[in-house]
Image (cartoon, rainbow, N blue to C red):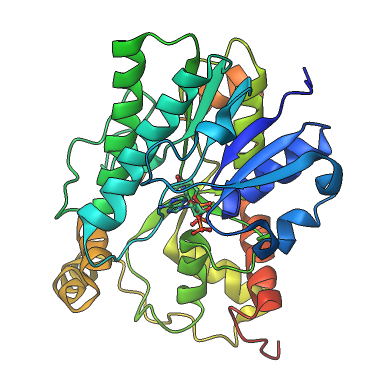
Length: 347
Ligand code: NAP
């Protein structure tokens, strides 16, 4: 289904989007990526195989009206990934909600104006499904996060509002294009960009002594290359519909630390004391108030709970199979050492 028309990828400089761009180019697509600075600031994109012939970078900003019109014009497909992904921000409304929500509306309006777009693939998040694990519940695409607010897990709130608005827009305006949504969990893996992504930063922090102990926390992980592939499959597969929870296996912090220890990283200041029992969780909840505001909030809403989810829809509908997240975690570590986000230590 390769066409001469470019595929628009918003936020092309991002951790996930740069892989989407790379995979689209590798498949022979023309790509129009949006970035915030002039193109020469993105050598890692311009040097991708096929980029010199088939990659165009245009500047666009989520908060400027009409900013995406030019990038979307004439495209059949738009993949909208741009959104701030940060946990601790000064002003959650200004720094998270406004760009996520207004930016998504801006991209939807540009798609509508274009008259050419057939499908918008939107990067939402597990954050729009829930902001807390619940023992005895298996989450799936029917679940919506109804708990987050500006004061409680505001990043999750921004993603929930943005995805809700996107679906509302489709209901209200009945455009000629459809919407397919990817909801990834914690995305890890080697990075094409020099920046350290918020999700890989969790692994970096675990290896840098920022975790005082092993807490009762677990996350669903998914490799960035699988997330990129999911977006392209969602774009190409005519039958793709609705939301797709995108996560491989969940892993407990205890298992993660043990994996790092047995994979040659035992010299790093990994958490040693195991406080993942009930008493430890109570203590950690109390100590979470000494953490930056939103990290503390995340700990309080998730500690002592086991995250379970059903990823069968994406495997069945899109034929996506997931990489082994243990391997991805080890590759993330090697890559963070390569980029200088973690020191090289003797094994
Ligand atoms: P990322 O590397 O921080 O990428 C975010 C992208 O959004 C960057 O290209 C960034 O541009 C752009 N952006 C941010 N604010 C913008 C603004 N005001 N105007 C224009 N562009 C703006 O993060 P990522 O992990 O790849 O995230 C991509 C998408 O996946 C986001 O929607 C995020 O919510 C979602 N997601 C991520 C994860 C994860 O674990 N990583 C999980 C679930 C969902 P600059 O490079 O100029 O900052």
